[in-house]
Image 1 (cartoon, rainbow, N blue to C red):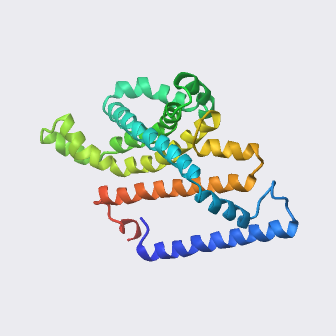
Image 2 (cartoon, rainbow, N blue to C red):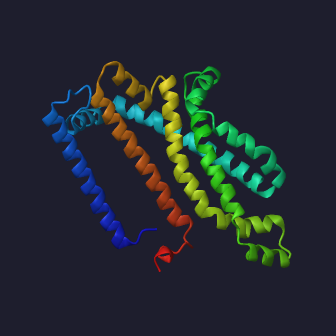
Image 3 (tube, helix red, strand yellow):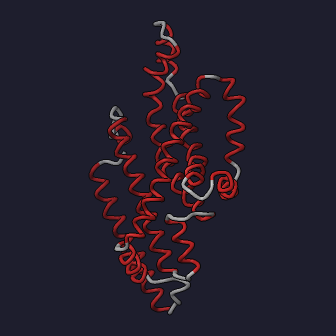
Length: 260
């Protein structure tokens, strides 16, 4: 957790870096006379993005991609928490299931997209399925790590008082796992957006992924950069939202404990 004073410093530094990089980029493009189809100037990208923001079709595409990301993320939380709790509680499941889950994760997601498309058609279903496939793993691994990192002394004490397995899980393991869980969620939401986008690249009738492909076909590079910025902003906002939620839920975490 970053203290308030440092947060202000960070905000100033982030803005400064943005200004410096944008200015350097703009100067480089103008001085070297780089053609717009290779590397458009930030001013051109900004212009295209502003024009895009004023068109209803752009917001329709944003809405489609957001829905795919959200439902994929929601489903992956349900699956990841269920599997994570079961695997952390039953050692047999950890031995038998975890190697398969890890092996499945090594398959590049882009390779699964055409199969999902074949199974689920061109609607939202394959995008949601791929979003789940990619975002489920980081959430599940963090759930398992959180539930298994329970303090041994506290565990022994609860057992000595005759606490059942379910009581230990609810009173000790789950609260203890919450910081890990939110770390998984922050990774998961970004992965979910990536999954939805990758599936849109393979086949879609709407969404920001399709929009990027259309701009690529028309050699509108500045517009492509504009969509990338919009996606970046979506990712940052989603990440920030989960960070805010973490502060509300994991309220017992001392924000200054790392700085004493």
